[in-house]
Image (cartoon, one colour):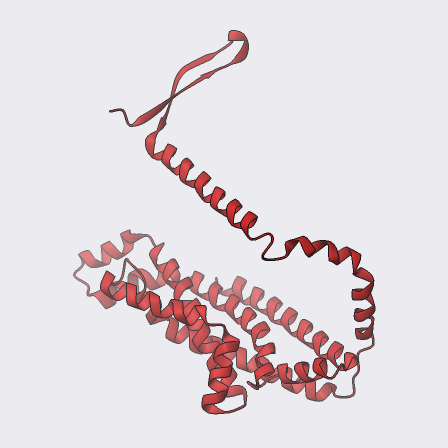
Length: 279
């Protein structure tokens, strides 16, 4: 049986004719698979249109006046508690730094154990499922658990960011490991090097740029995530943000939001510069 699918393609007017253009069966299968995936996506969007209440999108325009009236209360930020807010924002950034650092340190061995080209399948699958669980549970949920376990304060926030991001870091890092060029590793293996030496000298140098980039990205994300951990008592500026919103103190809320936006912007700019210098 032929491994190709015949296709006739004739130009109009008889200028040129391709009587028999052959499409490899594998390519034909890939195209069909892509169309199947797009069909599934379209089906999910169609089925989810009513349950997700997407038909209410028109309210964004019909109720625009209500949103404008509500937003007007945030146009006069207050500076009465500015030093306190800045101190809590700095604490929030430190929480994000520590949570990211611990996640990277612990995530590296888990990433190697999750890589098909490094570890055997009986190690890869349990490790991946463990990392799936860490990613699946939101850091806010982890914050609640750690607040109950270790009490109120930023330590609970650091631990929540650490556990949740370990799963994310392990996933990102393992994908980078699985995409490496195997030839350097094979060359090192040919010299009689052990498994650890293959990883240290053949794998790590190839993935370091991507690992740095992923780590900086997670730091940016964690600064944003850490701002809401205070909602459940895990420290940082989130506590003040929650209290100001709950008590309808629009001026204080506006000040906190401005501080958060400026801080995230500064962290984003600094991480971009570090990425350019290190990667």
